[in-house]
Image (cartoon, rainbow, N blue to C red; front, top):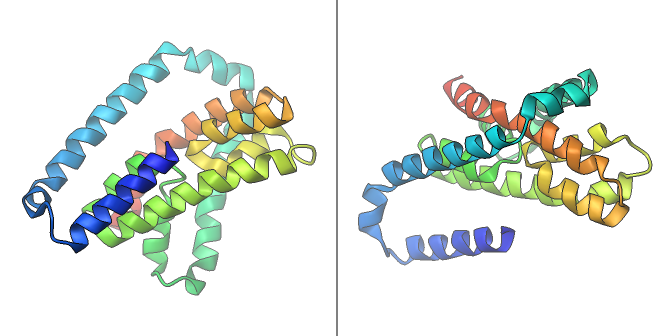
Length: 196
């Protein structure tokens, strides 16, 4: 999936540089909005199939605390390191509010700033890929809820990869629950940070 996303970014960038598809640029905002609504609808159907509330109850208070700590910790760390970045603190927080959900966050940021939308995509993608590498390495030192927080909203994919390597199936469960909780806040956080 990641390689196809990178391919689309590369082809889109090249098309923009070569002035192709200029007519499409005029309606791009509407197309992005329709695609985002469709994606959100499909994700909601998938969450509805799973007994999300039962899973949440079984996970207990710990996974809820770790999920909120993931959101708060991400925003605090980005605010602290933002003076070292070639972005304003606000723009850094907008990008970080994607929490690893590159497909949704990129579209939400696009109207505010197309260039920041690309930054958001790269940040979210790197967060997910970093989690895929770190989770198997840190598996014996930390508990499952702590590990899945590395990935933010994209916790499911790295959790599956880490569980395959380590054999710890709890990572998949906590990744699904924590990723779902963090994902619920992404459509709220990104517009909130943009509006600041």
